[in-house]
Image 1 (cartoon, helix red, strand yellow):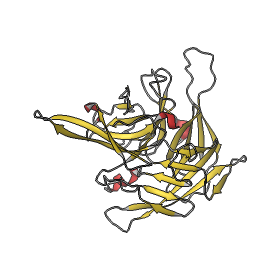
Image 2 (tube, one colour):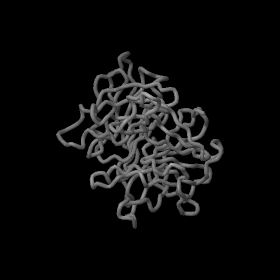
Image 3 (tube, helix red, strand yellow):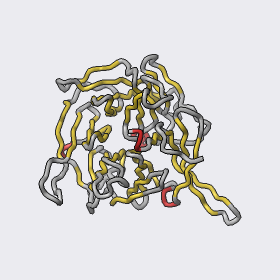
Image 4 (cartoon, helix red, strand yellow):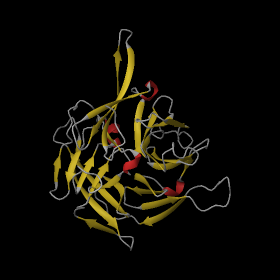
Length: 331
């Protein structure tokens, strides 16, 4: 049975390979588990998209965004249709730091198969967590110096990008109007919410019912020293008309999906089987790798109404570093 483009999110696991047949031909698969059932489906991928050197750095617009740690090439693939695209390595913005070639998160403006000459790929990269973007047809990436550094999250909503840094400052990144057919204008950056007193570990952005919201994730030391850390709570905020943040206790009609994917809020009325006022989260703590801690374990469901955690049900506990995959028709 194949994964269909149905209106539910999928918990995905990095590709794994095995040999089949007398000649030992290697086949590579990515596994998907329905968030509303315990059914697991496997999708065979081209061998070039599997292996230890491939790192998932984003899940957006129905595509997985991967970076090859050896060649530094960035590819985007729809794991259902296997349609894929390549873009140049993000090396034009790097410095001498060994960590500045890392792509920490990447999101798309539109599915590249629907708009192959007009999509934009936005990325948080490097040790300072800065922003850069690639426009379809370009030869290089462009760094957004105006966005500053230490960005935590970036999303795309109605063609514009929104980013937030670790202090809660929110930026709008947009394409200005242009009469030029070649459209040479770079993307512009505008601050739409100022920094605020933030005591959490990481900030995510979501759009809920047309309103821009922030979800703050709080980490704590894990009682298990081999794990190092775990999530202790989340808090939900909304930007009001005065550009201030207002805290929400619960969100009765919504479920949220956070992690390496493009952060998303889904209506529980439209997506049957989702639990209202719950945050479904996976582990995206890149900082842990600097200290030799293997990430991937900090995943679960946080019930905002009950203020308690539930595990992500899975019969494949040996699979590490899961992430959310949302087909484009669920966004």
